[in-house]
Amino acid sequence: MSVTSLGMPTVGVPRKGFFTDTSLCIGCKACEVACKEWNSVPADSNLELTGESFDNTSALGADTWRHVAFIEKQVPATDPGAHDGVKWLMSSDVCKHCTHAACLDVCPTGALFRTEPGTVVVQQDICNGCGYCVSACPYGVIDQRKDDGRAFKCTMCYDRLEVGEEPACAKACPTKSIQYGELDELRERADARLAELHERGEAGAQLYGRDPENGVGGDGAFFLLLDEPETYGLPPDPIVTTRDLPAMWKRAAGAAAGLLAGAALVFWGGRK
Amino acid sequence: MSPRRRRTEEFTSYYGRPILKEPTWEALDIAGYIFAGGLAGASSILAAGAQHTGRPRLERAAKLTAITAISASVAALVHDLGRPERFLNMLRVAKPTSPMSVGSWILSVYGPLAGASAAADVLGIFPRAGKAAGIGAGIAGSAVATYTAVLVSDTAVPTWHDAHAVMPFVFAGSAAASAGGIGAALSPLAEAGPARRMAIGGAAVETAMSFAMERSGRLSAETFHQGRAGTLLRLSKALTVGGAVGIALGGRSSRAVSAVGGLAVAAGSALLRFGIFEAGRASTLDPKYVVVPQRERLAARQEEPAKADTMG
Image (cartoon, rainbow over all chains, first blue to last red):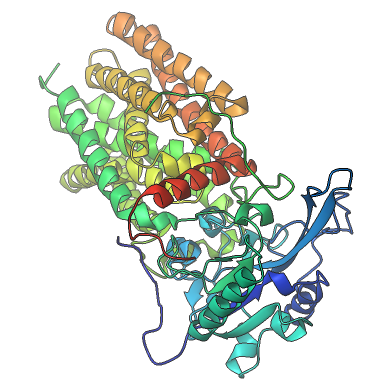
C-alpha cells in the first residue's frame, strides 16, 4: 500500500485531534455558532428552513465547518398497542483531518498543508480555487466558496492551537461531546467510553474513524456513534483515492505508450 | 462480473442528502479542457509522424490543430479556477501525488514544444530545431492525452474512481480518434492516409474501451446509462462509429466524406468526455453510490475470517 502521509510530523510533537462523543450531544449547536464566530465564517444562506428536521444547516461546506445532524429515529413499540417511540440522535460533524488526506495529496499549489500538530489546513493566500480537493474528499467536507472562489474547511482552529488554546467548538461544547486533545489519549478515552456504553446495553454504539488501519489511515477527528455511519450522513468505509494512484499512473503510462505505438502503426508503409 | 446485474438497493442515508460534494467544475471548462488536451496531444503525435514520413500539409494541419487546441485547453483550465489570477501557483510545487500538479508540469513542457514546432513550420525558420520540437511535442503529447484520465479518476467521485483502470485507454483512443478525424478533415486526400487510419483505429479503441467501462458491472456504472450522461454517451457512440465507418468506406476517394466523417469522429470524442463528466457528477448527487458499495465492501471484509479487521 503506497499512500502518502504527506507532511505528517515525525518530530516529537504529539498529534492533536477531536473525539466527538455523539452520545453526549444535546444538539445545542453551540459548536456551530462558536466556530462561525471565531473563524468569521460568513452566513451560507438567507435563513432557509429545510422543513425536514431541526437541522437547517444540512451539511458541512465552505461556510459550515461544524454541522450538527439531527436524526429522529423511529423505535418500534415493544408492547402491542403501544405507540412507536422516537429516538433522538444528534451528532456534530467536522473535517476528519485524515492521516492519508486526499485533499492534501491532490492539491496542486501546496495551499493545503499539514500543521505541526498533524491537522490539515488550507493556506488561503495560496489557494487558486482549482476545486480538486472538493472532488477528492471521500467525506464531502471541503468545498468552494462560490463568491470567493477558494476552498474552505475546518482548520481545527490553527490559530488557537498555536497559543495552546483548544478549538472554539470544543471550548463551547457544554456537554463535553466534543473533546480535543492528543489523539492517542483520545483513542484510549474513546475505547473506555465505548466499553461503558456496551455494558449499559447500547448495542449500536461504535467508534467511527478511530482505527489507524482504516481507509484513510485513521481520522484525526473521530466519533462515537449510536447507529450506523450512513444514518448520520457519513460514508461507511471511505478509502483515500490516492491509494490507487500508483496503479493509475502505470495504466496511464501504458496507454500513452499504446498511443505512440498505434501512431507508429498508422504510418507503417511510409510514403503514400 | 455480470454486466449490469439488477440490484435492489436498501440503504440508509441522512434525509437522502448527498455525502460527497458535487464537482465544482463547469462541464464546458473541464470536459472541454480534457477533450482539447487529448486532441492537441494526439495531433502532435500525428504531426511527428507526418514530418518523419514527408507529408508537409498533414504536418502543418496537425501542428496548427495542436497549438490551437492546447491554447483553448489551457484557457479553459484557467477560466475554471476560482482565482484565475493565481493560476501560476500550480507551478509553486511539483507533487507526484497530485495529477493536477503533474499535469501542469506536463503542459508547461508540452505547450512550448507544440508552439515552437508550429511556429517553425509556419514561418519556415529553424527547420531542424522545429522538427526536434515536433518529436518532443509528440512524446509529451502522449502524456497530455492520457494524464487527464488519472486526473478525474483520482477523486472520490464513484463513477470516475471505479473506472480508473480503463479510463486512460478510453482517453487515449478518444484522443487518437479526434486528432485523426480533424487531421483527415484538414489535409488533402493524398496525405491524409495515416490520419484516416488513426481516426478509425482510435474510434475502435475508444468504442471498445468505453463499452467495457460502461458495462463493468459496478453500481456506479449505472450513471453512464441514465439521464443526461446516458444521452451524451449514446450520441457520442453514434457519431464516433458513424464517422469511422464513413471514413473507412469513402474517406480515401472523397474529401467531403473524409471531412464530414472526421468531424463526426471528433464530435463523438468530445461528447464522450462530456458524458463521462456528467456521469461522475450524477454519482456524487445520490448517496446510494457511496453507501451501497462501501457497505458491501465492509460486509465482505467481515466475512473474511482474517485478522484484517480491528475495531474502528
